[in-house]
Length: 263
Image 1 (cartoon, rainbow, N blue to C red):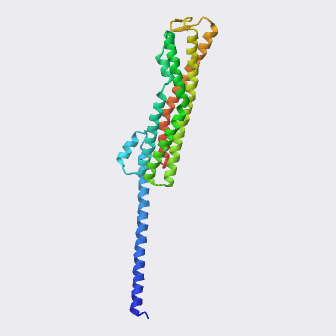
Image 2 (spheres, rainbow, N blue to C red):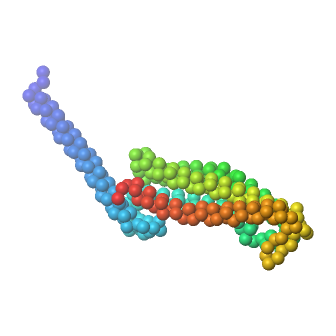
Image 3 (tube, rainbow, N blue to C red):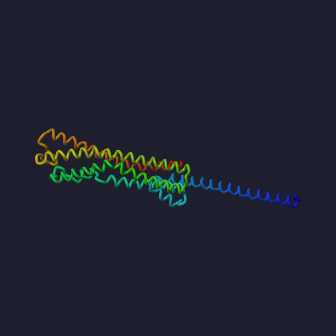
């Protein structure tokens, strides 16, 4: 039979256990509440810092001022992604840019060997333009995987990560669209350029160059050449516009980064 002393000991043990559990739960609640409070401060701090950023390069300065701020760290990942993909893009676009071939070549003063070499270079440029998008896409996938990994280390598999990666996908989609349009424009430009070179090869030794102007014996030939040259000039102008669009994208991306966490 349990004695009064035994019952008293059990009651005391239960009381102590309840007290310990209460303290533990209270501590966990306090720690969780403190973490939420710290997160809120970090968000406000990051938002305020981003509000003062008007150029992508200023983001580095903000991160130096608040090196532990997760918002600034994750936005820095978006900037890194933008810089690295822009570097890749510039590398691809520089490969056999047909406009460079046009600037380097005086068609009227070219020998037959020069024209043949130019035709060969244009074929290479055409091949680069046709494969530009297909070569770009695998690099986008690799970059996305790396950014997602680094972002998950910062914020975990949370809704914040999902929002961030959605933004990164939009960032990549903008650049892929631009690459696709540049590729198509280059192919049209190449076609016109190749036609000019083909006409010069066909009429080599028969045309004259007067004050920088190529004079063909037959007017239909001159019309065909002038039409192709006009398409080249229009294509070059459109390619310049697309190049400028790349710079505009950078500023647009900054606004997107700032809007990710609100301002």
